[in-house]
Length: 428
Image (cartoon, rainbow, N blue to C red; front, side, top):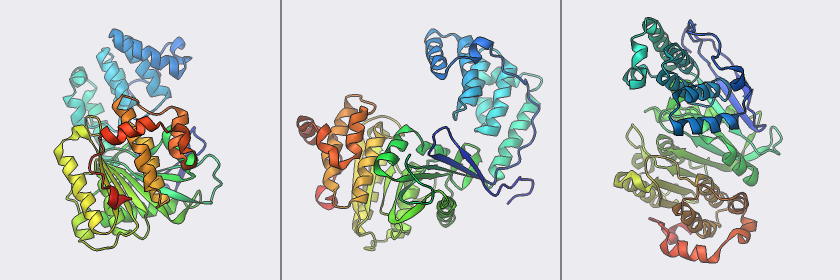
């Protein structure tokens, strides 16, 4: 470990959700900052509001363009909700409301608890008044020192989601969530992930990338062997909470994490059942061709590759080529586009994950994916963000599939759904 760091053997925190566990290791000792202001500027009436009330007020203030109300709402969220990005948004809102010192205060907090890129601050037009403030040089130095501490650290964060009925130490099938470049392990946390864990009786473990950019910003490096060892050490770190059921581990990744998931499966097919790679890509060259090299080593493995239709032909080509590599090595592979624009998760990722995981876990159930996915696709095309609760349950539980199936919807989905590059014979 680097000098000047407070090395914590293991710090375990429990979130508001009973079955989400966060494990932190090697938290760096950050430089002390002289806070611009000590207390929140919110009046008492704001401090007693609920999260729902604040979000509704924020929505109304944004529609009306009321920068003072927006700043107050953002300040409340940064002080109470503390979701990733709240501190940065509070700084932006206070700057727009001409409260320069409050903006600098929230930037200081963002540098410690989220991420704060000094070049982004200085290029953001809303922060122009901050750069003229007499205290800016001191605040700038604080931000730079804090960022340097995070980058030089060996900080690790592991987020584990378990079924509500789980007993510590019990064996469970496990899914490893691998985030994208500059993101964080909490990408694989939330109500949808908890529901998948409950309905499929699995554990989802998400780990931070080995390259630390800030407290809430990580990347995967060009040293794939070290990255793989890092992931395996994180799996070992949760053994007191859950033990991996042998032969029942799968991988899910997005962007750089998607590419990492494919490479990890190719390197260690004996440990993983398969992988889901959403919009896979990397800042580093893909190692898949060299790792697979046409060897028939992937028999019995299942790979799902997806991309967003608006990402362009380059991403589609990459996914199809990766799918072909896995098929050549004996794996079953699906390459599929989802409707949308931009580099992002599919809107109905919960259904996508659950169906793919069922195919991996029960190898003879590929028909389940092809019956359900056209319905899901059609719902996405018509703008549905997610299924109603009963339909989500249906998509997660194979023994109740008839309850939510619409024969006409299935037929329309099969005939007209955007099911790109599905190799039915190879996959089924």
